[in-house]
Every structure is written in C-alpha cells, then in structure tokens.
Length: 138
Image (tube, rainbow, N blue to C red; front, side, top):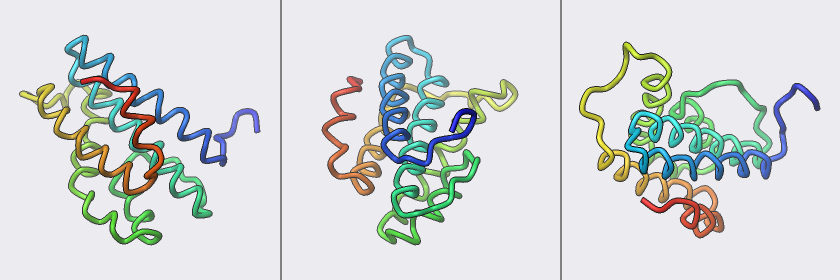
C-alpha cells in the first residue's frame, strides 16, 4: 500500500495517539494554535479509525463535523459531540492560515476542549481512554 493511506484502524489509532501526545508538548511550549491543531488531527484520526472499523470507505477530508455525520450513522449517541467537532475543526485552519488566527484562544480553552474530546473518544473507543490519558498531562 505504499503511497496510500492505511485502511487498518489500529494504524490510525497509533497516529491519533501520537498527535494526542503532541497537544501536551505544544501546551507546555505555550503554543496554543499548535495544540489546537494537534487536537483536531487526533480527533480526525480517531474518527477515521472508528469509521473504518464499521466498513466506511476512507475519505480525504479534515472537517470533523462531516466525519461525525458519517459516524452518527453507526452510533447516534455521538450527536452530542457535534459542537465540539465544529469548534475543533476550525483549529485545523487557524494553524495553517495565519489570516484566520483566532484572537484570544487560550490554553484554558484548549484544556476544556480536551476534556470533552476525552468523552468523545470514550464514546467511540471505551478501551482507549486510559491509553491516551497517560499520553497527555495538561
């Protein structure tokens, strides 16, 4: 599969964990935008792993709310995380496009999002909770 993205969910979870650890590194460096970016990246990969486990066809998209729309078809309880996904999707673009940098984004806001993200990941992968909590100390 050289040059193609893996369709194997554990591969996506492995990279999601790596991005999750990067959130803590960026917060420790007081780089809020990068922490938000890696939060988005981690949730994107967790969502894709969840969907791939369900037989979903991989799509090259970054919008968490669009991925969540697909995930809700498999688990309607995930609907409660829609506002989180909309908000965190914006972090992807904020980090990549300087003209979109949100003024006033703080470490405290990211930490609140992290707590809700933990609940979201718990809803998708209950067994994953302890693993990623050990990866991030904020």
